[in-house]
Length: 152
Image (cartoon, one colour):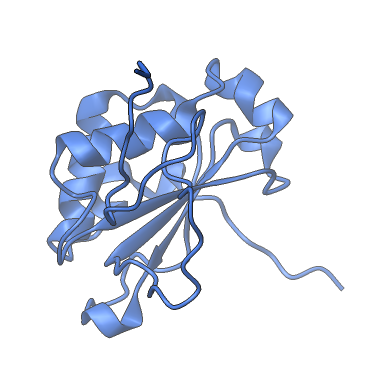
């Protein structure tokens, strides 16, 4: 008899040991799980130092679960990325909104800095705004947004 605990991800697939959601069996015909908003969380080496935690993407993902936004019509997908090249801004996220979800896309392509300073309440307010198609910028303020410039 084995003491192995079998875990399942949000899509109902058995998860590989040592992973949060990676399925044991690859089903190439299974569709991608729907999401309304997608938050990409930088987790490169320098961001880990700025975030003061290696598991920042997992932390954010777990908060979406706590808020009931890890599945369903308002799902917020959280993805860890290795490096945005924006280390000078501390913890950085990039928000994308799914155009087929019928959102206004007001938060689409929004680069947010210094998220390593966000409390669980800050994250939950951002999630709430994404789920309800409200402006994240109105909550964070202009100072939290990373400016962009074209260089020739």
